[in-house]
Image (cartoon, rainbow, N blue to C red; front, side):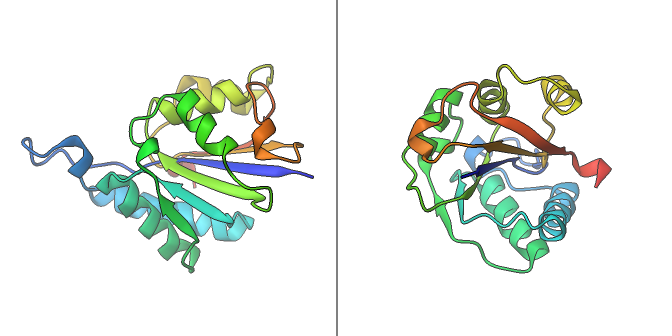
Length: 171
């Protein structure tokens, strides 16, 4: 049985208000457009997650809402404080806690945790998508990883393959 993991870095955020706490920074205009485009791409490719896990940061929640707009549907989602600025191992632990009936999950989070998780899970893989991911995981980029595991509990470093890596300017 194949499980699929969608890792979405939040879209471009605004830095217009210098005194604003990091967690409260909203998206800028480009970020809003990119998030809708990612949602449309997900709809075209049939990448509809069973569950979306999202950081509580304003920019990640806005990204998720705009992805839903582009997707044309509301997702089953959960805000999880663990995701905000999490290290890859914390994200891995969160994924391992998922139930077996969830086949495709999306995590909307931040750099460096999400890119680190993608590289950790795909350790031992090779190919052009992995090379691109190693170079840069820009805002609103979406990495799609697959694994043949029956249970999320068995998710470990090196147990996934990178199937796709989408960058907004190429969509």
